[in-house]
Image (cartoon, rainbow, N blue to C red; front, side, top):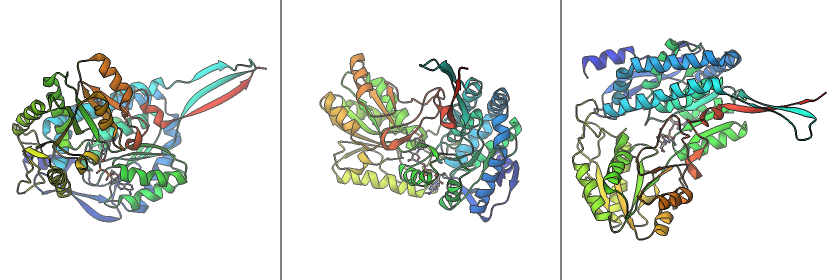
Length: 486
Ligand code: NAD
């Protein structure tokens, strides 16, 4: 570890952040490790169930005063947080690379993306509007207004440690809600560092509370069961999301569920192949393939599949694998050994089902949890790689012969987060917008995320939207009042 890294880690808080104070946790400390080296970076506090309830107590105690804080004041605090994040950009990027493994350039990209939610929702905080009008009978005024939903539990995954936090915290605070944040155990340092930034930006005590824990279900369940909680926002796997929806049903909680994906990446015979290859590299290898929006199934017209596969394989062999802090590295490690084993098993299963390996398919010797970027062609129906979320740097290509088959293959999944389509035919593009069952679509691009856009899925990819004009409404409830005309 470099001196700069050691010095940065020393500045990252290690406690639970409850009611504006750093506190010990009831459990044994958690080791946070660097997936590129296996070295322990830092030990942090481990919350138990009682700590979780104390965090909720703090969020509940602060709820009324934060809801009553002027929207302009809430907006300016978020804007200050955005500015501070720009000042501290290099620290955040380095910290994310250290705990999660993504290359430094991508971590920098996440600081930009994650920061935009602070800026966007600082702008939205002062634009929460309602309606006023005469009822159809002419006997009364109908007033529709928006109120904060109340205390929220925000649960985030490890793959985008900053952006998944800001995408929830910023709209919640803008709407006037207080929150308890539970980051992923594998990458909690970024959230702890970020809450320190929020304190510096002027977020009052109790408005944002952070609990880190090695026992998420034991700590989260009593919070979700507590009638004072009014909203659960979760980003993570569909399997865990389903369990949380069941728990949330007891209290009839508002929920937002940003769950798994299995994105089809469709390349038609009329596609600009340069753009399609560029899009594939972005949609597949960003974040080492560990993104809910990662292209999972490459569905390519049979007439261009060979050329497409060769060109992607050429680009893949030029990727440089290593610790994300090293110059020129474009592929970091996977988040842990379990992720490597899972990726390897999917590749082996595809090969056993008859796929052809163009490049990769190798687990390098340690240290670190690396997997070589891989390209498979001729993936056959029944291969697990077509139905499961890969979450690793593996391209699996299947072919189709006509548009109807492409649509059928693309939609043959329980997921529906995002799709990518490459065609130069505008009419075909419009048909794909209408026919693909996904919450988002990239038409001739491999990247759709933007703070100003509604992010989210259909089917088992989730409920609700984050970002865009829609994002703040996840944290607002609508109130209608009738005032009779006297
Ligand atoms: P995960 O579901 O294992 O964990 C997500 C979070 O939930 C973590 O903080 C974890 O500690 C917590 N958790 C796990 N079990 C819990 C329980 N029983 N009760 C309460 N909390 C619990 O997911 P992950 O491995 O961290 O993240 C990868 C998954 O997230 C992938 O499926 C990916 O597609 C999805 N994801 C979705 C989006 C999106 O916006 N749709 C974005 C990023 C990641």
